[in-house]
Image (cartoon, rainbow, N blue to C red; front, side, top):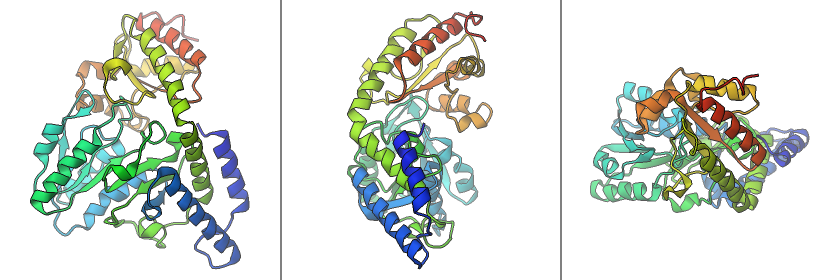
Length: 377
């Protein structure tokens, strides 16, 4: 949900900054100044170089620019995707293979990439590696420094640079993160994941090694043509500013809600944990929690909850657009197949209340027991 401050900022910028930043007239120059100010602010908020900031329409486009840049290669070689990737990354597999690339998938166990198996996939002809920072379904956080270290060590032996790309959409705003310390070559972000507007995002591109297939007016360092969405960018920065200021307070609130849900739900017969628990000692996002309820298919459970104004999903929202795709995803993540048809993903954040969690717990307990008459409207 877009924050009130971000919404106000969007409205103000849309009303007062009406010029095209590429235009030479006064309104265009005003817009260009605003755009540069926003670029510097984004860089400051994320603690990255201003030259690495490329504005996009969201995480999907940012991922696509990074991946499809490989199609400029004269000799297509090997690409490695983790099995955890969002469809915004994994759906490029078919196109890359059609163009002559060998696409291999690094396996995971219970939502975590197997580092040793990942290392074994590295070869002298690897050109691109894609590993998401945090999974959007089960909330597992990958050990990116360890994986990047594997890649950089291999580069020293092969003498060839490997582009390391991260889908960081789910991570930004949830945990303290300094992208510049990860030694990655690019990363994708989306404003709506941290209470900014839909339809605006960011490609972090510090290496300068990307070239977009889509050509336009040369905007965004030539990587993303088209008139920039200044109002959206202003609102995104406002949301980033709020998140950065409140990140520790918000994290404590989310952790409290996560523990409340775990304590109540996992003590209920018929509810199976899918995501790691807070006390498991594993790196997770507390704001994403997946469970499995064998009593009903996930589509039935989500519909019952929706009728009670409780909104959860049966996987990634994007994957829900493709029948059964989220079921296959869970198996790819290294989870048992019997959990897939009954998966429920619960997402919550700073605006989620304890009262909402209590209502959710009550409804899920009835559903898990097979008694839905008390929750059906």
